[in-house]
Length: 184
Image (cartoon, rainbow, N blue to C red; front, side, top):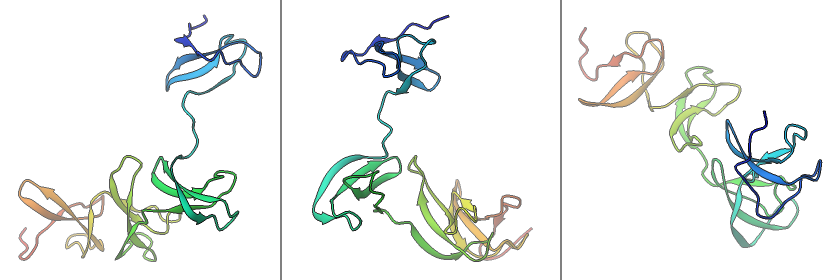
């Protein structure tokens, strides 16, 4: 059974495979562009451009250290970054928001240290700076200390109904750590 197209593209763009008209179709991941003669011709491409970052501003007076073209400010899937105006042909990129480093050692690999990072959804988390070799990550604020129950070398701080409390950062333990006097 041939699914009907949502609507045709106004530019009357032609399929590079068979020459038929390109139409907007709907799939399980949303709308996309596809050939009108589907399923005989399987040409398709994303509706939106999948390039890694659109240009926000040209940085005048700054040139790429690799190819000497202008540098530009781009908006990508993980936030703003600086790149060559000929990106991705020229691979030069610069990160604007560098991760905030902490002096807290990674409890898993014991050689790296925790850095604050931001997910593509804008959430803040802390992970080992040796990623992908070490994949330790936590979603709460890390605090130096040791769990009194399991002796895990890291604590986290969470907001509860009673205020800010400290907990063991181990996913296995996770017990609250009493500040000051301990009681069982």
